[in-house]
Image (cartoon, rainbow, N blue to C red):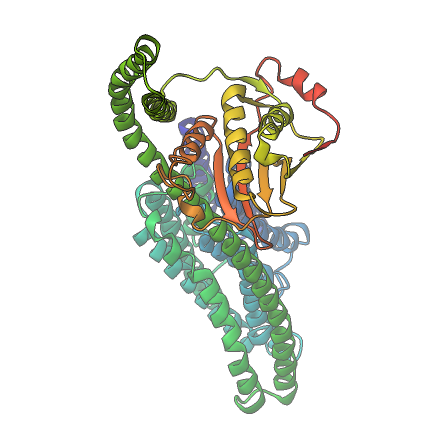
Length: 592
């Protein structure tokens, strides 16, 4: 990059020295005109090439910025070619009014739009389409100003002095607005972008001053192409042409990028100001000014037509904004739902982690005396003659101790830290096994279990025994909830949704009093002695270790729904492809 800058500096110096030497040696004539026009064309062409080269090496808003800058240089170069056509090829003075004046006037508009892109600020919001509409609004407005103020004296009511005056004033205003905008960005930016905007401001200011001096010389009949008046003009053009080489290479926002929201409002604000100016110009065209009737009528129709065109663009912009707002609303709702789920899972994980450490220690301490109590109870029954009443009391004691042992085993299972043996698992086989085991329960014989597995369900990576424990526990809870209900049904649906496999258990029972608490340890709605409230907490931990999630909710049509989500197994895991091939087809089953 430094090598290219050095080469460009040498070329710029050669062009400037050549221009100064031609002005000193050649004097007024075709030779000086040829040299002056060619040097200015070369400067603009170099600027266009440098700007276009940045389009290929950047992306996002920075690429849009350089696209607009390239468009501005393209307009400018097109004007220069028209100028050269008259002075070099036809060898005659450029006519006044000149048809290329509108191109020279409009070349600043894409550069204004480029500044509105704010390439030095954050690039994380989609503004390309809105910026394009704002650019079109500003382009139409500046074109309208030219057609409103300058063209009438060129075609509607020919008046060369008024044409020159209107064109010079409007072009001066345009350059002043552009310089002010550059100055604001220069003051607000930092680091490499501040230096870039500083160079652009200095080169534009020099061009404005040198072009103004050249215009004064033209009015006094002292200017000719290739004269000393063109030396500062060539310096400014060579300086502007180097912008593509002076730009920051990465496009990374500078330290002022925290003001992105404030910066991005200026382009739409200017577009709105342009729209609001149209009704005032309509009123002035109809009732004010001392222009001829033909000019006033022309301006009135022009303003009305422009209002219609800009109104359509405003409608398009509002449509884009509405779609973007709806997209953001849906995205924010989804993000809020994900945040709430993550918060619930985090709280649940913290509960399980802290409680698991406590339970693990307590359960191990309880196991030793329980084992001794069971042994002594059996020894008492086997070695000591007991009366029938004592035998009954001893058996009850043994039952309660054994029940306590089962509870402690549940606590150990809940808090266990044994690593799982994960492998490729097809969920349909695990679910059918759980349904068969649950069907052996006498309470489940009057309850129907419907299983539907979609054909595109892929395998998952997990521990089949632990997954069987989860599904069996959910099924048994559903059976308990349907006890005493005629026509009790449990429906199990297995399907793929995106990159996840979803298993849903739906029953037609009475629902759950508090679905948000069912995974809390020791929370249960069963009668005393029917459950410790640790089963679903253990299920929650198992599913969490499988990188999945589990949830519960009441159905609007009645009953409860338990959902379990698993990530699809990575295709790189050995055996995953074979399992996918063997799990095809639609599987439905019904068991009673």
